Image (tube, rainbow, N blue to C red; front, side):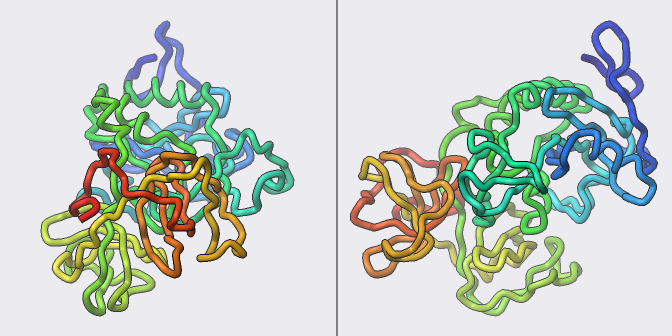
Length: 355
Protein backbone atom coordinates (compact mmCIF):
# COMPACT_ATOMS: atom_id res chain seq x y z
CA UNK A 1 0.00 0.00 0.00
CA UNK A 2 1.35 3.43 -0.95
CA UNK A 3 0.19 6.95 -1.77
CA UNK A 4 0.79 8.51 -5.20
CA UNK A 5 -0.40 12.09 -5.77
CA UNK A 6 -2.58 11.84 -2.65
CA UNK A 7 -4.40 8.77 -3.98
CA UNK A 8 -4.15 5.30 -2.47
CA UNK A 9 -2.41 2.59 -4.55
CA UNK A 10 -1.40 -1.01 -4.05
CA UNK A 11 2.26 -1.97 -3.92
CA UNK A 12 2.15 -2.94 -7.60
CA UNK A 13 0.98 0.57 -8.52
CA UNK A 14 -2.67 -0.22 -9.24
CA UNK A 15 -5.05 2.28 -7.62
CA UNK A 16 -7.65 1.43 -5.04
CA UNK A 17 -11.27 2.07 -5.94
CA UNK A 18 -12.06 5.79 -6.14
CA UNK A 19 -15.63 7.11 -6.06
CA UNK A 20 -15.34 10.88 -6.18
CA UNK A 21 -17.47 12.95 -3.84
CA UNK A 22 -18.56 16.41 -5.01
CA UNK A 23 -18.17 17.64 -1.43
CA UNK A 24 -14.47 18.46 -1.57
CA UNK A 25 -12.72 21.66 -0.56
CA UNK A 26 -9.40 23.44 -0.77
CA UNK A 27 -5.96 21.92 -0.29
CA UNK A 28 -5.19 21.15 3.37
CA UNK A 29 -2.14 20.23 5.43
CA UNK A 30 -3.67 17.61 7.74
CA UNK A 31 -2.54 17.34 11.35
CA UNK A 32 -4.82 14.61 12.70
CA UNK A 33 -6.56 11.40 11.66
CA UNK A 34 -10.23 11.12 12.67
CA UNK A 35 -11.97 7.73 12.99
CA UNK A 36 -15.73 7.50 12.34
CA UNK A 37 -18.40 4.86 11.87
CA UNK A 38 -20.87 5.24 9.01
CA UNK A 39 -24.09 4.34 10.91
CA UNK A 40 -25.32 2.81 7.65
CA UNK A 41 -26.45 -0.57 6.37
CA UNK A 42 -23.41 -1.12 4.16
CA UNK A 43 -20.24 0.48 2.87
CA UNK A 44 -21.85 1.04 -0.55
CA UNK A 45 -24.72 2.92 1.10
CA UNK A 46 -22.24 5.32 2.73
CA UNK A 47 -20.17 5.70 -0.44
CA UNK A 48 -23.29 6.48 -2.50
CA UNK A 49 -24.38 9.04 0.09
CA UNK A 50 -21.02 10.80 -0.07
CA UNK A 51 -21.38 10.91 -3.89
CA UNK A 52 -24.90 12.36 -3.67
CA UNK A 53 -24.87 16.14 -4.39
CA UNK A 54 -27.61 16.65 -1.80
CA UNK A 55 -25.78 15.03 1.12
CA UNK A 56 -23.19 17.82 1.70
CA UNK A 57 -20.95 15.31 3.53
CA UNK A 58 -17.90 13.27 2.57
CA UNK A 59 -14.88 11.46 3.96
CA UNK A 60 -11.50 10.60 2.52
CA UNK A 61 -12.03 6.84 2.63
CA UNK A 62 -14.64 4.24 3.53
CA UNK A 63 -13.52 0.82 4.79
CA UNK A 64 -16.02 -2.02 4.44
CA UNK A 65 -16.42 -4.75 7.03
CA UNK A 66 -14.39 -7.14 4.87
CA UNK A 67 -11.52 -4.64 4.68
CA UNK A 68 -12.25 -3.28 1.19
CA UNK A 69 -11.10 0.33 0.90
CA UNK A 70 -12.76 2.96 -1.30
CA UNK A 71 -11.35 6.48 -1.53
CA UNK A 72 -13.73 9.40 -2.03
CA UNK A 73 -11.55 12.50 -1.55
CA UNK A 74 -7.78 13.01 -2.19
CA UNK A 75 -5.87 13.05 1.10
CA UNK A 76 -4.66 16.63 0.59
CA UNK A 77 -8.15 18.07 0.05
CA UNK A 78 -10.78 19.03 2.61
CA UNK A 79 -13.60 16.53 3.16
CA UNK A 80 -16.78 17.32 5.09
CA UNK A 81 -16.46 14.62 7.76
CA UNK A 82 -15.91 16.40 11.09
CA UNK A 83 -18.56 19.13 11.22
CA UNK A 84 -18.50 21.41 14.26
CA UNK A 85 -15.36 20.23 16.04
CA UNK A 86 -12.42 21.32 18.18
CA UNK A 87 -9.16 19.67 19.16
CA UNK A 88 -6.20 21.11 21.07
CA UNK A 89 -7.52 24.63 20.60
CA UNK A 90 -8.08 24.23 16.85
CA UNK A 91 -11.66 24.50 15.57
CA UNK A 92 -13.12 23.22 12.31
CA UNK A 93 -11.25 19.91 11.96
CA UNK A 94 -12.37 19.48 8.34
CA UNK A 95 -9.54 21.85 7.44
CA UNK A 96 -6.97 20.01 9.57
CA UNK A 97 -7.65 16.27 9.36
CA UNK A 98 -8.12 13.15 7.28
CA UNK A 99 -11.34 11.23 7.92
CA UNK A 100 -11.70 7.43 7.81
CA UNK A 101 -15.23 6.01 7.86
CA UNK A 102 -15.63 2.43 9.08
CA UNK A 103 -18.70 0.67 7.73
CA UNK A 104 -20.88 -0.09 10.75
CA UNK A 105 -24.37 0.22 12.18
CA UNK A 106 -23.42 2.53 15.04
CA UNK A 107 -25.09 2.72 18.45
CA UNK A 108 -27.90 0.15 18.70
CA UNK A 109 -29.67 1.54 21.76
CA UNK A 110 -30.41 -0.18 25.10
CA UNK A 111 -32.59 -3.02 23.75
CA UNK A 112 -30.61 -5.86 25.33
CA UNK A 113 -29.44 -9.37 24.39
CA UNK A 114 -31.51 -11.11 21.75
CA UNK A 115 -33.12 -7.84 20.66
CA UNK A 116 -30.32 -6.03 18.84
CA UNK A 117 -31.41 -4.63 15.47
CA UNK A 118 -30.37 -2.10 12.85
CA UNK A 119 -33.48 -1.06 10.97
CA UNK A 120 -35.07 -4.47 10.25
CA UNK A 121 -31.81 -6.44 10.44
CA UNK A 122 -31.33 -8.62 13.52
CA UNK A 123 -27.79 -8.59 14.91
CA UNK A 124 -26.42 -11.62 16.83
CA UNK A 125 -25.41 -11.03 20.45
CA UNK A 126 -21.90 -12.27 19.61
CA UNK A 127 -21.47 -9.31 17.23
CA UNK A 128 -22.37 -6.70 19.87
CA UNK A 129 -20.35 -5.16 22.71
CA UNK A 130 -22.51 -3.99 25.59
CA UNK A 131 -21.15 -0.94 27.38
CA UNK A 132 -21.27 2.77 28.15
CA UNK A 133 -19.67 5.52 26.09
CA UNK A 134 -16.51 6.93 27.66
CA UNK A 135 -18.21 10.28 28.26
CA UNK A 136 -20.86 8.64 30.47
CA UNK A 137 -23.72 8.22 27.99
CA UNK A 138 -25.20 6.47 26.14
CA UNK A 139 -25.22 2.88 27.43
CA UNK A 140 -26.30 -0.08 25.35
CA UNK A 141 -25.14 -2.11 22.37
CA UNK A 142 -22.28 -1.27 20.03
CA UNK A 143 -21.47 -3.52 17.02
CA UNK A 144 -18.05 -5.12 16.96
CA UNK A 145 -15.55 -4.13 14.30
CA UNK A 146 -14.45 -7.21 12.28
CA UNK A 147 -10.78 -8.11 12.36
CA UNK A 148 -10.41 -7.67 8.58
CA UNK A 149 -11.77 -4.13 8.85
CA UNK A 150 -9.52 -3.23 11.78
CA UNK A 151 -6.46 -4.65 10.01
CA UNK A 152 -7.17 -2.61 6.88
CA UNK A 153 -7.76 0.53 8.96
CA UNK A 154 -4.49 -0.04 10.83
CA UNK A 155 -2.43 -0.52 7.68
CA UNK A 156 -3.89 2.59 6.07
CA UNK A 157 -3.64 4.69 9.22
CA UNK A 158 0.03 3.87 9.72
CA UNK A 159 0.69 4.89 6.12
CA UNK A 160 -1.22 8.17 6.52
CA UNK A 161 0.55 9.01 9.79
CA UNK A 162 3.93 8.46 8.13
CA UNK A 163 3.12 10.13 4.79
CA UNK A 164 1.53 13.28 6.25
CA UNK A 165 3.38 13.35 9.59
CA UNK A 166 0.10 13.34 11.49
CA UNK A 167 0.22 14.31 15.15
CA UNK A 168 -2.39 11.90 16.53
CA UNK A 169 -5.37 9.63 15.93
CA UNK A 170 -8.70 10.68 17.49
CA UNK A 171 -12.33 9.68 17.38
CA UNK A 172 -15.19 11.80 16.08
CA UNK A 173 -16.47 11.73 19.66
CA UNK A 174 -13.18 13.25 20.91
CA UNK A 175 -13.43 16.29 18.66
CA UNK A 176 -17.22 16.70 19.02
CA UNK A 177 -18.01 15.46 22.58
CA UNK A 178 -21.71 15.31 23.38
CA UNK A 179 -22.61 15.71 19.70
CA UNK A 180 -21.04 12.55 18.27
CA UNK A 181 -20.59 9.01 19.60
CA UNK A 182 -18.39 7.36 16.96
CA UNK A 183 -16.38 5.21 16.84
CA UNK A 184 -17.78 4.16 20.24
CA UNK A 185 -16.60 1.81 23.00
CA UNK A 186 -16.34 -1.26 20.75
CA UNK A 187 -13.47 0.37 18.84
CA UNK A 188 -10.05 -0.36 20.48
CA UNK A 189 -8.91 3.26 20.36
CA UNK A 190 -6.11 3.05 22.94
CA UNK A 191 -4.40 0.12 21.22
CA UNK A 192 -5.13 1.48 17.74
CA UNK A 193 -3.66 4.89 18.55
CA UNK A 194 -0.62 3.36 20.23
CA UNK A 195 0.12 1.14 17.22
CA UNK A 196 -0.44 3.92 14.67
CA UNK A 197 1.73 6.42 16.50
CA UNK A 198 4.37 3.82 17.50
CA UNK A 199 3.83 4.57 21.19
CA UNK A 200 4.47 2.08 23.99
CA UNK A 201 1.41 -0.15 24.13
CA UNK A 202 1.63 -0.63 27.90
CA UNK A 203 1.26 3.08 28.57
CA UNK A 204 -1.52 3.44 26.03
CA UNK A 205 -3.51 0.59 27.59
CA UNK A 206 -3.04 1.60 31.23
CA UNK A 207 -6.21 2.24 33.19
CA UNK A 208 -6.75 5.95 33.72
CA UNK A 209 -8.93 7.69 36.26
CA UNK A 210 -11.67 9.93 34.89
CA UNK A 211 -11.09 13.66 35.50
CA UNK A 212 -14.25 14.97 37.21
CA UNK A 213 -15.02 18.50 38.42
CA UNK A 214 -17.85 20.27 40.23
CA UNK A 215 -19.08 23.63 38.90
CA UNK A 216 -18.67 26.36 41.55
CA UNK A 217 -21.25 28.80 40.16
CA UNK A 218 -23.53 29.31 37.16
CA UNK A 219 -21.12 28.73 34.30
CA UNK A 220 -21.28 29.43 30.57
CA UNK A 221 -20.19 26.61 28.27
CA UNK A 222 -18.69 27.99 25.07
CA UNK A 223 -17.82 26.67 21.64
CA UNK A 224 -14.11 27.47 22.06
CA UNK A 225 -11.52 28.35 24.73
CA UNK A 226 -12.29 32.09 25.02
CA UNK A 227 -15.13 34.44 25.93
CA UNK A 228 -15.31 35.48 22.28
CA UNK A 229 -16.94 32.11 21.51
CA UNK A 230 -20.72 31.92 21.82
CA UNK A 231 -22.34 29.70 24.48
CA UNK A 232 -23.42 26.26 23.27
CA UNK A 233 -26.95 24.83 23.48
CA UNK A 234 -27.76 23.89 27.08
CA UNK A 235 -25.49 26.57 28.55
CA UNK A 236 -25.12 27.70 31.32
CA UNK A 237 -24.45 24.86 33.76
CA UNK A 238 -25.90 25.28 37.28
CA UNK A 239 -23.79 25.39 40.45
CA UNK A 240 -22.94 21.88 41.64
CA UNK A 241 -23.13 20.28 38.18
CA UNK A 242 -20.52 17.54 37.65
CA UNK A 243 -18.48 17.53 34.46
CA UNK A 244 -15.75 15.35 32.99
CA UNK A 245 -12.57 16.99 31.74
CA UNK A 246 -11.57 16.24 28.17
CA UNK A 247 -8.81 18.71 27.27
CA UNK A 248 -6.97 21.78 28.61
CA UNK A 249 -6.11 24.95 26.70
CA UNK A 250 -4.54 27.73 28.71
CA UNK A 251 -6.95 28.63 31.50
CA UNK A 252 -9.83 26.85 29.76
CA UNK A 253 -11.03 23.26 29.95
CA UNK A 254 -13.14 21.30 27.48
CA UNK A 255 -15.76 19.36 29.44
CA UNK A 256 -18.84 17.18 29.09
CA UNK A 257 -21.59 17.37 31.73
CA UNK A 258 -22.39 13.95 33.23
CA UNK A 259 -26.14 14.48 33.61
CA UNK A 260 -27.12 16.64 30.64
CA UNK A 261 -24.38 15.78 28.13
CA UNK A 262 -23.76 19.49 27.44
CA UNK A 263 -20.22 19.78 26.08
CA UNK A 264 -17.87 22.65 25.34
CA UNK A 265 -15.28 24.95 26.89
CA UNK A 266 -15.44 26.55 30.35
CA UNK A 267 -13.11 28.74 32.36
CA UNK A 268 -11.17 26.33 34.60
CA UNK A 269 -11.14 28.78 37.53
CA UNK A 270 -14.81 27.98 38.15
CA UNK A 271 -14.23 24.23 38.48
CA UNK A 272 -13.42 22.33 41.67
CA UNK A 273 -11.59 18.99 41.19
CA UNK A 274 -13.34 15.91 42.58
CA UNK A 275 -10.73 13.42 43.92
CA UNK A 276 -10.96 10.05 42.20
CA UNK A 277 -12.21 7.30 44.53
CA UNK A 278 -11.14 3.99 43.01
CA UNK A 279 -12.31 0.51 44.03
CA UNK A 280 -11.82 -3.14 43.07
CA UNK A 281 -14.76 -5.52 42.73
CA UNK A 282 -14.41 -8.10 45.52
CA UNK A 283 -17.25 -10.45 44.48
CA UNK A 284 -16.91 -13.16 41.83
CA UNK A 285 -19.40 -11.12 39.77
CA UNK A 286 -21.25 -7.95 40.65
CA UNK A 287 -24.56 -6.80 39.22
CA UNK A 288 -24.67 -3.17 38.04
CA UNK A 289 -28.17 -1.70 38.35
CA UNK A 290 -30.00 1.34 37.07
CA UNK A 291 -30.67 2.66 40.57
CA UNK A 292 -29.57 2.20 44.21
CA UNK A 293 -31.39 -1.01 45.14
CA UNK A 294 -31.74 -4.65 44.10
CA UNK A 295 -35.26 -3.96 42.78
CA UNK A 296 -33.77 -1.92 39.92
CA UNK A 297 -32.96 -3.75 36.65
CA UNK A 298 -29.37 -4.45 35.64
CA UNK A 299 -27.78 -2.17 33.05
CA UNK A 300 -26.11 -3.21 29.76
CA UNK A 301 -22.65 -4.61 30.49
CA UNK A 302 -23.63 -6.09 33.88
CA UNK A 303 -22.28 -7.97 35.77
CA UNK A 304 -18.74 -6.79 36.46
CA UNK A 305 -16.11 -9.46 36.96
CA UNK A 306 -14.01 -9.91 40.08
CA UNK A 307 -11.03 -7.51 40.33
CA UNK A 308 -12.56 -5.03 37.86
CA UNK A 309 -11.48 -1.47 38.70
CA UNK A 310 -14.25 1.11 39.10
CA UNK A 311 -14.41 4.80 39.95
CA UNK A 312 -17.08 6.00 42.38
CA UNK A 313 -19.45 8.70 41.10
CA UNK A 314 -22.09 8.88 43.87
CA UNK A 315 -23.01 7.14 47.15
CA UNK A 316 -26.24 6.51 49.02
CA UNK A 317 -27.82 3.96 51.43
CA UNK A 318 -25.14 1.32 51.05
CA UNK A 319 -25.01 1.62 47.27
CA UNK A 320 -22.38 3.28 45.06
CA UNK A 321 -22.82 4.59 41.54
CA UNK A 322 -19.68 3.63 39.64
CA UNK A 323 -18.11 3.62 36.20
CA UNK A 324 -15.75 0.82 35.18
CA UNK A 325 -12.40 2.07 33.91
CA UNK A 326 -11.76 -0.71 31.38
CA UNK A 327 -13.36 -0.50 27.93
CA UNK A 328 -16.20 -0.84 27.24
CA UNK A 329 -17.19 1.27 30.25
CA UNK A 330 -20.22 0.30 32.33
CA UNK A 331 -22.00 2.85 34.53
CA UNK A 332 -24.57 2.13 37.25
CA UNK A 333 -25.23 1.30 40.90
CA UNK A 334 -23.59 -1.55 42.84
CA UNK A 335 -23.83 -2.75 46.44
CA UNK A 336 -20.95 -1.05 48.28
CA UNK A 337 -20.26 -4.14 50.42
CA UNK A 338 -18.70 -5.84 47.39
CA UNK A 339 -16.15 -3.07 46.77
CA UNK A 340 -12.72 -2.65 48.34
CA UNK A 341 -10.26 0.24 47.92
CA UNK A 342 -8.14 -0.33 44.83
CA UNK A 343 -4.46 -1.16 45.19
CA UNK A 344 -3.92 -1.50 41.43
CA UNK A 345 -1.86 1.39 39.94
CA UNK A 346 -4.14 3.68 37.97
CA UNK A 347 -2.98 6.81 36.15
CA UNK A 348 -4.31 10.13 37.48
CA UNK A 349 -5.89 12.89 35.44
CA UNK A 350 -5.46 16.32 37.10
CA UNK A 351 -6.37 14.92 40.52
CA UNK A 352 -5.13 12.53 43.22
CA UNK A 353 -6.57 9.00 43.32
CA UNK A 354 -8.17 7.87 46.60
CA UNK A 355 -7.24 11.23 48.16
